[in-house]
Amino acid sequence: KSGVCDSLASRLVGVIDLRAGIAVHAIAGLRAKYQPVVPDDIQHTGIQPGDAQPGDAIALATRYQRWGVKSLYIADLDAISGREPQIDLLQKLVARSETTLIDAGPGSAVVSDSLASSTSVKFVVPTESCGSIDHWADAVKQLSHHQVVMGLDLIGSTVRTNRPNAAGTTPFCTDTLLSHVSQFFEPLHPCVE
Image (cartoon, rainbow, N blue to C red; front, top):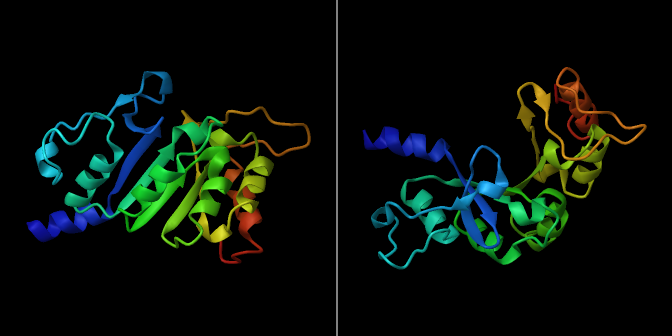
């Protein structure tokens, strides 16, 4: 039984949303309502009771490690909102994960520069931070294509964006999205379908 649990845990990705230096619990994408993560089962983290406070991102990462989770997805909500990326905290969290996906929105290039030596980090460039395929492609060009994952944000069947489409750009459309993305990567990876 333990082997099955270990195998399953190694395939999971622990999620940490960061706002102002604390880990917050997402509530239906309504960021204004996010609250600090509460260390409800701190006895399983290896941290002494009383050492972890609500919103302690390191304690949350430690909890994931103790459960056998080897990968983290970290959303830097400050950077996504156009504020200063939380580079020091991101570096500490990356050190606790075998593989890390970081969503820093428009701050991804700055974070990428600070974590350049880490080959286990990939950057998520979400549709919500771009207004069109063209904006997304420009954001990807700022990062190494080996480090990029497209974040597809949907509301129902509509691609979620936070920027209006500019004249002359290709809008995100669920029917044509994959063909546009594969055309972007075609020169880099001819086998993309």
